[in-house]
Image 1 (cartoon, rainbow, N blue to C red):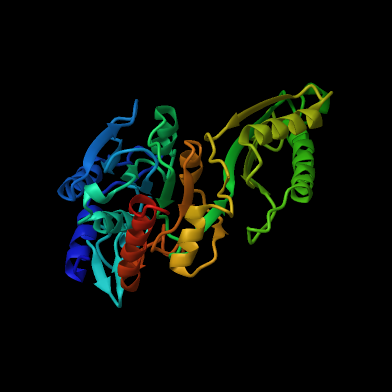
Image 2 (cartoon, helix red, strand yellow):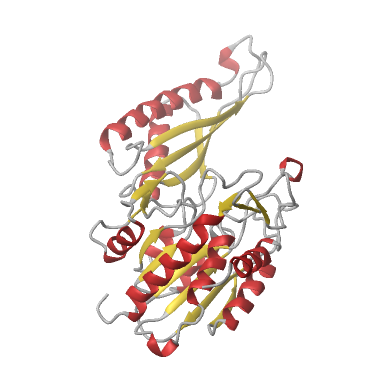
Amino acid sequence: MATHAQRLERIARLVSQPSVSSAVAELDNSNLPVIHALAELLEDAGFAVEVLPLPGVPGKANLLASLGRGSGGLVLAGHTDTVPYDHALWQSDPFKLTERDGKLHALGAADMKGFLALAVEAAEGIDPDRLRAPLLLLATADEETSMDGARVLVSWQRPKARHAIIGEPTDMRPVRAHKGIMMERLRVIGRSGHSSDPNLGNNALDGMSRVLTALIGLREELSARYTNPLFALPSPTLNLGRIQGGDSPNRICGECELDLDLRVLPGMGLEEMRALIRARAEQALAGSGLTLEARALFEGVPAFELAGESELLRGAEALTGEAAGSVAFGTEAPFLAALGTETLICGPGGIEQAHRPDEYVRCDRLAPTVSFLQRMVERFCISPNP
């Protein structure tokens, strides 16, 4: 196991490379410097490394590294990008690892470059000849925005492995489930005119009020129909987040737009829910002469759940001493699961520290994380009877 200084040097190397992922082009960075730094660390540890550019996304790439050969195996996975930051709100340089009061502060320290550095450490010194199944390390691009790095894995049908651990910040508690998310925009189109005579137009705001009533009813229906006790909030949620329409009080509103978000439970398909929302909105407008346009604001992230009888889950619970639970945030787990990989989420950071100024990972979590990963590798890649 590395010394504390060696461990910090490796984490510092990864967090020093800006890799912000943002839909705002001026804020967005390439993740290639992080990918190349990680590739050097993995090559030094004996891995065969592939840097895999994302098709049609310049400056972005995934990394897939392997040690050993054969089928099955274990993937240690994480994303290389971070969210944007406000430098003025940080007590120290976001790109310089700073140790204060038993905590390592830097952008990405918790979410989740710190985990990637610890995964490399856990793999150091492994004799490939001892591996009965391969050990893989996966690092992805753009998880914080489009999840394009994870989505392309499904089209590539790689990696093919039996098990995976994603090191998102969970305070080292195994996580077996999370909700999915979809965001939709509904636009009601009417006809503007002078407000002195409603017959001169067709008010889109009036139509949107009927759509809102229908969606509130749908929210109650979904809450009654679907429930999962794994979640602190066991039902799906539908949030009406933004509305905009009209331009003047003395003009009949010609268009009105609504943005909403739906957090779905495992078993609720995104396309099924998308179609249901649009159908209810169309029903609400039937006979009004108003037109509905609907589009997804992004592709969405499916919900995820790992079966409770999974050997991977039982192994993680035994090693951490924690019962597996759920989280409210989305991850890349459903995309790995779509490849047939049993996947769980477990990492040293805390979600309360992610996406905020002075993000940190606790120093006392580092060595236990390395030990946990080493024992999982032993169990699923080396031991003859995992």
